[in-house]
Length: 418
Image (cartoon, rainbow, N blue to C red):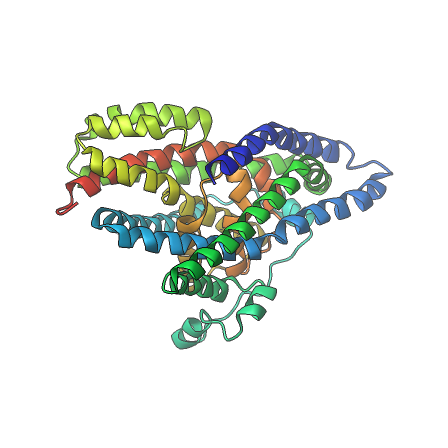
């Protein structure tokens, strides 16, 4: 999987600038031609082109998320059973991922209430995306809400993209797969690994033509929202980057909990942060993380177990950032997010992050944010535009992830029995 992931990472890196350039060109052309007599003719072509590209991305969400969760859950269960250090690390990972998503749910909701996006730009984005807020599900009783997480028909849940019951079924399926006969387990997980790889190839193909799809969608946004759309996207970038930076600062509190002096931790983790900032890759930062953890006094046994595991499974900024994307989309569409919807979003964000593969944000953007939007009743039509500017928040995502990886390694080292 490492070489496969490396190829996808390289492909994503090559398309980043092309997608961003398509966004800028599309917005400028759309805004410049807003009064042109032939604008409707161009929109008649741009809307189906952009819609087809979005649909191509959406078609991969359900099979990719299900196979990813099955393989990830079975792998995590096997790792936890392998030893005490790994089990403790996984437990800490899970708690911190939930804490990351919870922080975002509270903080970003409060910030958006105090500093909302520009009204005219939001209205233009909403009109350009061509979707209205879906009906937000009601939760009359706690019992009815809990029952909604257990699918009576998993196939129907998948067909209707009902993410909450589908995620629960995938988790249980993955756990049950670890209890069957060894040869059958190997074959079953190999099948879902193959499905996951095939879906990732499809995503790669769709992203290869992303400049065309983003150009069409950006043109629509520019024509309907004007240059004000750039203000809304700037507002989004600032908020999402701010969420990632805040989570990174929380990683320093983890180091304090591990009884590591802040200055010593900051000095030891700085080289890994520099590599993460320049490459947007936690894997590329692993050697610097190992050196930093050694500098902080961790044993070779603990850092040799925890850091590779963290790079594979633990991305502390992902639940916060992915949930932040969904909350921002809800803000644009005027979706009223109840406490129950936010709790469901927190849970799905943490689970998807723990199971998702270590690929660039472009590859996993729809896989990780789409299910959260679906469970919270938020339309997906705005995601392609946000994908085009994902490069900037993704830098801060990666820096936060490597910082937390080193901090958690210190925490596991300090825990009794590690």
